[in-house]
Length: 228
Image 1: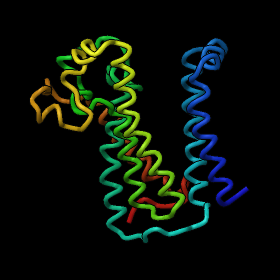
Image 2: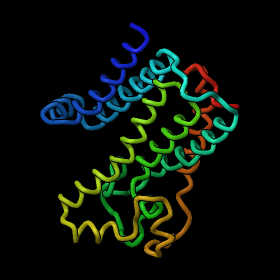
Image 3: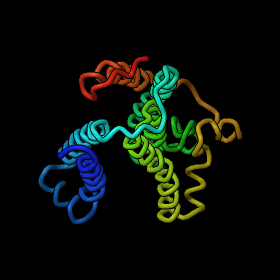
Image 4: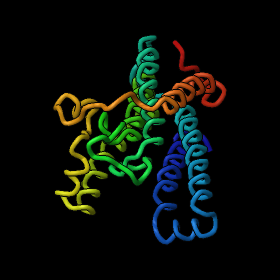
């Protein structure tokens, strides 16, 4: 299968893989057999493999050009991907019950860490990644692909906020989220958040390593160099 058929199939499999395994009764059944760590590891590997296939399928779809390549697009993508990688690493390493991906327990609303910079660091990383690749790729399939990811990330921030408010109650949610904001630096500008020291070093280093690895592996894995 190739062309639009492969792209449509890969897209359907991707969304199914993110919807079905995390819903009851499938998730409890899988966790009971694989363990919590085994489920998380298997789910992460599966998601990454399907994502690589989806991006490759978009590249193999018929090239209906919406705009043509210019070197500035690669420069902009490289600029956007650096904070995306840093936010991803910081989001995974931080305590943040307000969003998915962060560690639970021990959250201090007065010192929210990376959540003070942006409430949903992982979703913001996905949004920056999608926008970077949306600009750098002008074919219809890739615009559809990365546009969907950008919309998913932006909508996801709102949906998670609503779910937390519904689960905790609006007053409790406001107490926990008081020093955070959806938009980067918005809580800092509004005076609701003041950093209490530098960001942790090892997640920043991990983010830089990830950034370099993505640049180095982009051509052998995806088939195109991210460099101008």
